[in-house]
Amino acid sequence: MALLGSAISNEVGLQLLLYPLGSNVVVRTACCSVGVVLPVYSTFKAIEKKDQNEQQKWLLYWAAYGSFSLVEVFSDKILSWVPVYYHLKFAFLVWLQLPATGGAKKVYTNHLRPFFLKHQAKVDRILGSVYNEMGKTISAHQAEIQYLRTMIMRIMGSDEQSSRIGPARPNQAGSNLQIEDQTRQDSDTESDIDD
Image 1 (tube, one colour):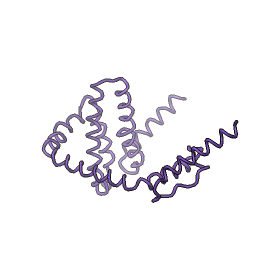
Image 2 (cartoon, rainbow, N blue to C red; image 1 turned 90 degrees about the horizontal axis):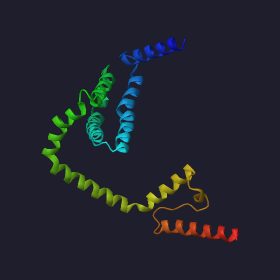
Image 3 (cartoon, rainbow, N blue to C red; image 1 turned 60 degrees about the vertical axis):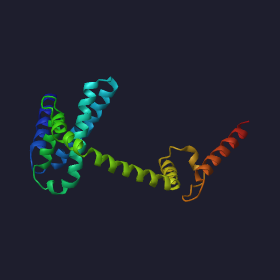
Image 4 (cartoon, rainbow, N blue to C red; image 1 turned 180 degrees about the vertical axis):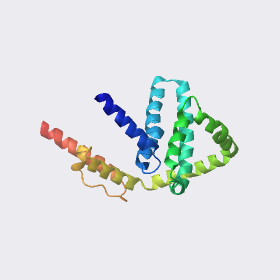
């Protein structure tokens, strides 16, 4: 009986995956699983085993997958209307990972590497400029970032002492110091009570 149930579920799963109309939810989930979940775990294993060949294989995969995802951001709205788009995407993601095909290595060697070698100086300038602007923005908004962090910690309930501290207010100089001072005062008061 278990064998029959297993065969039926496998057949239904295969039919849902391969049936081009009406199975986009299943195929999209399969794309996410094959494109992200499995590679994340495989990358973890390669790092933990310190296997250089596996690490290089997964670095190549992530370079190819990231480039594909970047292109997909701009073309997904159009391509998603193609009836078998997600099936083709699934097949492409499997092709990228299969050791027999070496898809990720081919994408990297034939397309990504030549592109980046040709445009490396320009990309470095753009990224340097972006990082510089990000640094300026983060530095200019430290109080707001601290306020947001405090609010998230309170919502998550992971900061036990945050419920005893008054709300941090953005745009106040030294708001971080106020929180630290209040935390120290609370700790001193607790230790006086314990004594």
